[in-house]
Image (cartoon, rainbow, N blue to C red):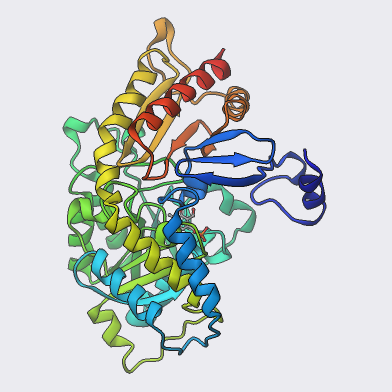
Length: 433
Ligand SMILES: Cc1ncc(COP(=O)(O)O)c(C=O)c1O
């Protein structure tokens, strides 16, 4: 550990870890899908930092946009009017599904979801929120309450009025269905939950575009259409949490675009600024926007639509659009799929490789006799060996339980992706040996 890392460890907390076992990463620079640490090592960023860097490291347009905004040095109040604020909202209306019109700005995904839930309660006058059994919506107390994530447990009892529905986790289908017999039971579960709770008591259902940190569950085609139809029939608002799955990550601007669905409220963060500034937003339909014409919007924050954040949003969205990076994620999907299937072919511990665009997960299980693929998760001790091997091979990617996630920046070149997957294969062999 360097002097700087030691000095920092005395004064600054690391997130989601016992402080003694945190693994510091002293990043000093980077370009595209690679970054460099203080010891001179060059890493592959296969996690896009925290799933929030679709434009990769050191993007010249982002550096220039932030430098210009910093040079302007504008101080604002939440009611301020300035060009980047109007432009960011116009761009969001342009790239989000048709019918989403008006934006509320904030600084993070958790805040975006907090405000979306508040708006849904204000509009409907109802209290309950339906969320998935496995989901993540942020680390604030209220959003952890909504999250179907073990990280919620130390903070129970949480927000009252949270109701759970089942997951589109096809590898371990909660209804025991195979793809051939699937009738979207996971989407139909919303109907069951609403009938049980009484739809007139439910303000909204909040669903990640694609469940991210809890396992990359790619729902069967038509899933979102069915959810939309159930919400419409019962007058329940639909909130799509596109914090992780948005801004091209899945090969479309937003995951709901795969099904052509417009939610009532959509939350965004992470890629919205390319990771170059802390940003988030809620965009809503005309109907919800109109409600607040003559009802108080009881939502706000000091750094609402901060000029540095708005400049980063404008630059990031324009860069994604002008460099065709959303289409690039879609174009790289077959290469990623083929590369991961090839890794799995000779490594029976990879029970499933699943994903869309450049958002993937490997589920690792104990192989059955004769090397057949198993279902029992690899033990924590083996996963710890794998994690150490990944670090030795300078691969930055997210790991959780028996899952390894792959989400490289959308700017990664074909040859770089091949090289990085080769490195992943070598690291897995070391960890599994
Ligand atoms: C789907 C989803 N929603 C919300 C959040 C929370 O975002 P933030 O950490 O910016 O508050 C995350 C973070 O990983 C996320 O994956």
